[in-house]
Length: 192
Image (cartoon, rainbow, N blue to C red):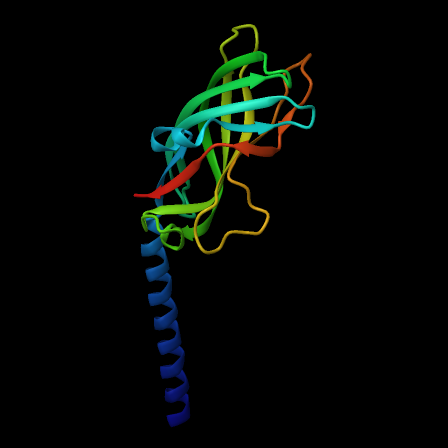
């Protein structure tokens, strides 16, 4: 009987510790709210945020917003502008983007290793966005916007500062194009 009580006591202690741990994790995750910036504010001094497609086309993106990285529900807001140029630099199209859904966020750590504020954070966010071309003859396009900021102490070796954009649904009579190589510009996540 004494052994049974000891086993029950240990079991209850373990359950209590797990419960406390989960509460602490949830409390920490509830505070994971970030502002993200793509080539705006002080980042404009790093130049335009540009990525290229395999055919040489270029995409400039600018904008900002907020997101919560709590496991459920993930929330996101944000908007900005896009400029699509051919490899020759001639503008093919312009438009605006709006954040629809946060797919995920991976933190690379805060800016202390780079002598920056502890509120600055590196990482990679993937956001579903809707691009509305300024040309009314072209319908809105959904795409995945990947934002990468290379500060912190957990930066993957192949991480590149900037953005990538993968078109999700291509309107009829348009060729699919993915801007999958970061070229220039600055991005950042700021813990709120």
